[in-house]
Image 1 (cartoon, helix red, strand yellow):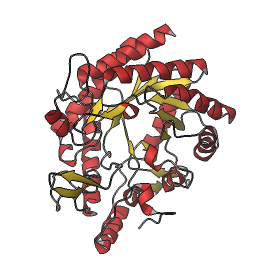
Image 2 (cartoon, helix red, strand yellow):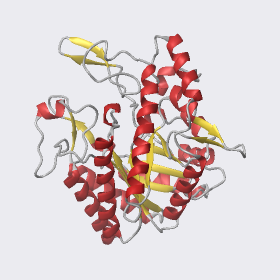
Image 3 (tube, rainbow, N blue to C red):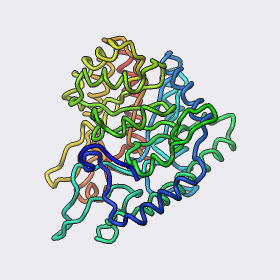
Amino acid sequence: MTSFPGNKSNWQQPFWSDKDMLALVISELDTLPELLSFEEISEFNKALAAVYAGKAMIFQAGDCAERICESDALHVRKKLTFLEQMSRELSTLMGLPILTVGRIAGQYAKPRSQHNEVDGDRVLPVWRGDSVNRPEATPEARRNDPQRMLLSYHAAAETLAEIKRYEREYPRDVHPIWTSHEALLLDYETTQIRTNPHGESYLASTHWPWIGIRTLAPDSPHIAMLANIANPVACKIDATVTPSFIATLCRQLNPQRIPGRLTFISRFGRSHIHRLGALIQAAQATETPVLWMCDPMHGNTGKTQAGNKRRELSDMMAEISGFLRQVKTHNACAAGLHLEATPNPVIECFCENNHPEEHELKQILCDPRLNVTQTQMLLTHWKERQNDL
């Protein structure tokens, strides 16, 4: 079982009441085959180095929170087709090869701002993602169950197998689809660290782990874990991150200054994106190569009058514009977009022609996602703003 510095709740880790079951689950996870090989992760490192060299761009997208029940071929194929379609459209717009990265095959755990939520006259623990508990609004469903980490492993394995089948079926038409997720759940992720014959450690659960803003702190066990693996690493950053901490992250996570090794994903919100420039300068002062990506969604999440989450496309576009302006001003690498998006015909984000009702917003399991048309609008906006600079 993983030990944590300070207060465990600071690191968004679930409380497992059944310690004996937790020990059994961790023991079994330790013995299961690796989900990804060191060679696959090395290839992704090379692909990210090409992005830093200006030879490609990244499109990273997927669900806010993956569902274990959607790891079957039908659901996975739909997501892969969407990712491939959006990457093709972006490649045409930009005239560049696109690295297609899904929030897929592992995005089963979610950090939460509150421990509990009110459902009618009841107070229930929040849903922390399918790796931890279930979303149904009952006490039993919301009980943290360590056995769900095993379900997550097998769902990820099934999803990865489908990705490989998809790539084999269309070898001339489909570029590699890389996987990513927030490496949040330490009891799970630490069991997925493997060592190659040369003694190099790597995280076999995903090509590209990231650290979320809620667990990004100087004494974070997540930083300590990812600092010692061969995978490329990303960090979500916002206006609470200081220039000195950015410099520390550069030294901790990319001490050898390898191009493509470290990515910062900005999620400032349209009102604060102007503060990105100071962080870019701090990274540049360390002479560390950094990829800078834009997540225009999380920093622009508000609340409706009824208390449901609200995201407005115009805010996202404004943040993209500000991001590109800051990166261009400081001659840094604008590597791409990080989006929460779905191929399903949902209406979850507000825009000129989409105004979801309160009852629709209430049904959203986690955060509002873009639909296909809205995703296309953001890709076009990215291209147009780059042309303007």
